[in-house]
Length: 261
Ligand SMILES: [Zn+2]
Image 1 (tube, protein in one colour):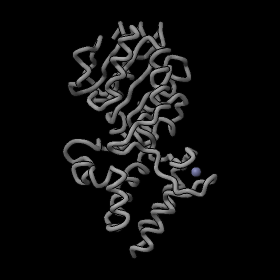
Image 2 (cartoon, rainbow, N blue to C red):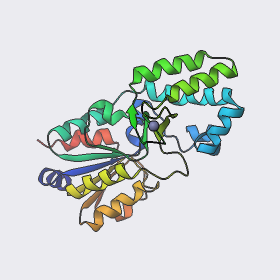
Image 3 (tube, helix red, strand yellow):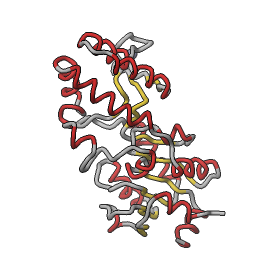
Image 4 (cartoon, protein in one colour):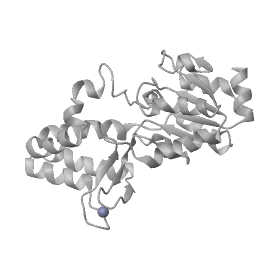
């Protein structure tokens, strides 16, 4: 602990966050037993083709999925770890947060330098002209209430289209700014992620199994640039063997003990 405390005090730290960070906010990991993808086949519910086909042929099933998925995300509030990371950024210890989570909780907590490498469920994007807009949780909640009260296929489809919204520039249909399975990751957040690592001396990997690419490649990028890599996770991770240090604990306990002052 003393080693990492000294490192963080002397150099900035980039923090790579995984699903483990959001569990205390009430968002279960999507992968693994009991996760969302164990009940909803990702081939149908997390690919563009699958979602298009559900919209056309099975809007009721799509409605059920969207209500459950957004419902979990909208109920969640930032937890102690999100708040600690905001403070560490404000105090100048953290160069940026890189997150695989799409729940937007780091931004909602107040972190400014956030690279959401898998996108954000609160973001919408125009596939034609690239315009982005961010939905407030209130706006999402209102749309979701409309969707959940719709019962005919026609009404359900109309609410799903309303949930997507229209581009203010080209009037095209917006799509959620989340990375679906089989889709290329947007370049910009990955570039920010590399910049945060480059500006730091330490990469702290917190609550991530380190097995989902390209996030899993970032520790390698850090080492190439002579940065120290530390892992904080209660379970073994794919990053442990190459890390400079492993803390087998929950993120909240780690940051509580860290106390930099
Ligand atoms: Zn557009």
